[in-house]
Length: 518
Ligand SMILES: O=P(O)(O)OP(=O)(O)OP(=O)(O)OC[C@H]1O[C@@H](n2cnc3c(O)ncnc32)[C@H](O)[C@@H]1O
Ligand SMILES: [Ca+2]
Image (cartoon, protein in one colour):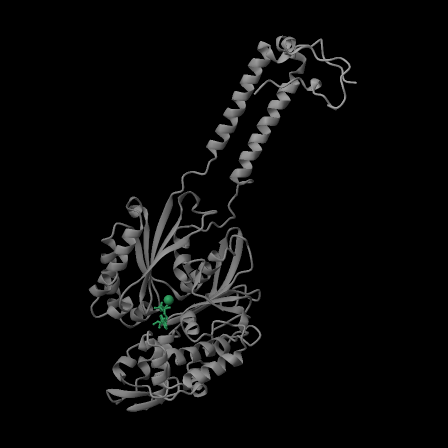
């Protein structure tokens, strides 16, 4: 660039003719005051300083090349096991980095608690999903990737029934998992409180409610063998029924969570209780209002009563089997389902059922797992429809003949298909009569499967907790984003340079023949 003329030479109004014309160009060249050694040196040093300052400032604070970390959680549920693989930016573990589920794998076969009599099969069942995880995680990262297995209600029940069998299942599972190159961090049974609380953490973490200190969402989880309800209520400080209280300090906010897990109130165990209710006298055939007309399947007493949730109710002298026949009557089904809840006593201000304390329902709720599978199948995930319409839909669905149901849903597993009338009725009864949702607050429930690509469930919350990924205090965040920082540094450097040049004005060589502006 040609050197700038001194500021005073700039014509203010170019339309006005100067009374004294500037000297010829050749003269100007000779006398250009910028061409003195001092100003040239200052200019060069200044330019180098600016370039150096901006370069160092920008490079030093450039976000480093993004690397990722991984974590694996196996959810050993009562009905099946699923593997979840999570990924997050390595540099940002515990502040701005978001943990995302990048893969999940459903283990073939039943839950690990079903392998009580052949424990080695429980370990073997996990192999395929673990090999998938091995392919998903870059091999460089295998050794540092934590691997957790958490078992829920199925193993809780097996442990109650036969603790040595549950120990053997864990040994088999541990042996199988340790053969993989990950950092194995243990397999254990989660308590009901942990299961409920981590489900709540997952939902609120994924919704970004914790970091922003927003009002939280409650969590409703319906499994095969247990069900959890967790929410924050202003009317609950943990003093009443402290066993339902879990406290957290997350991102600088304190949470006092109410949580309860009802063992045996997952949908498979409730079905057993409902069937036990109908086979009290040991009949050879029952007409079940929760199953479709025309449904007729032989069931064995020994299998039905093979669970601590019903084992003490097995009718003495019952035959080997009974014909389980459907009658398709929603109202009668709801009556039988009601018998599994005990509303007779409550030693607290208020209870849900079975004498369990529950504070006032507050805020919105995310309902996942079987809540979602069932309500999605029944086209009932829209909770803005009135409760009465939900009942009518179930009434009509339950009354549909089994033949027709099978015909209308050719791709659906028959075991699932047979149970949607019962499950829908149970969900509605649990929500409205068990937890006391009303037609006013039913619409606060959202039936969800995933939030921003990650499954709703306890696994993510469990991993975030064990890896200390949610800090108790709010992280210090940089005042400016990177782009803003670069702009500020550049502008300030230019301003400083201009000021420096101006401050050196006394050193500027004088120019005697400055044009006069009239
Ligand atoms: O939490 P726990 O009680 O240990 O059980 P789980 O983890 O195995 O339970 P899930 O949420 O995986 O499933 C809950 C129930 O939903 C059933 N289920 C899973 N997928 C389903 C689908 O697509 N339709 C209907 N039912 C389904 C499953 O068999 C269980 O009875
Ligand atoms: Ca579960």
